[in-house]
Length: 336
Image (tube, one colour):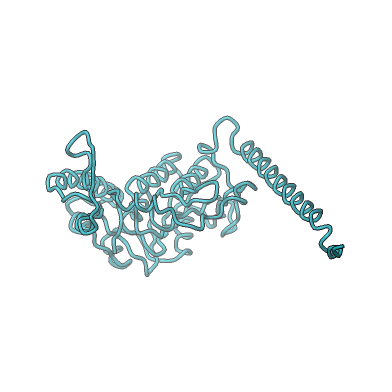
């Protein structure tokens, strides 16, 4: 007869079954809690109008002890709607900024926004979206004020989104300007020929694939795109001229893409003062005609579902990267 198996091996199927049952029950619990989180979040944020129109945030006290309410909002980084992906979702930094401005506009108690900018610019439409939202805030009530504090950069699109301000404060080490438009793409024709890669494009018209990276650059197509760039530039120039109270002709020599130190920007009237947070705070109280204000900041209401699944993907999306690299984009961007 064969000897009996060791005692510790006899019950291993039972313990494996227990572990599997525990895993299934735990997963079920997490999914049910996440579902409850989604329902609760939906109940809080809808109510007939929709979360996008009336966004809801948790307010945290940031600075000051007055009774007049001021919201502290900011944008840092490149102005782009390229999404930061998670396991089951994604976030749009432009939309998040818009939602915070929109929430401040809908809150009747908010008297002003201190908007902190640290951006070298980015996509034209992304910049214009934030510009419009800030403009709508100011137009919603005559007594509302907007103060911009430039931390590090307000270059190109970063300066564009600062233009609705009643007052622009820049820190002494800030970089300002780069008023202009950029359209950039890559041409890999030479490389593709060396690798033996050919391009086949079926198109409905001669200009349907302008700046095709596998084809020679067509001067006529470049001229067409230059017209688009010039139109965006004139819009940018006109907004700066209106906001800063100067003529286009006087502004144009400064608006060739160059950047300025805070001192130079002040000299050219691109900003109103140089200082830090306390300068922006004092300017806000002066504009509102009060001695102190209570500054709050917004924090997004996170459902359990979002907290569980908002971690970023560990691997890059190479297809998205290749698409971005091959797609020409008109940008208000300081290219350094």
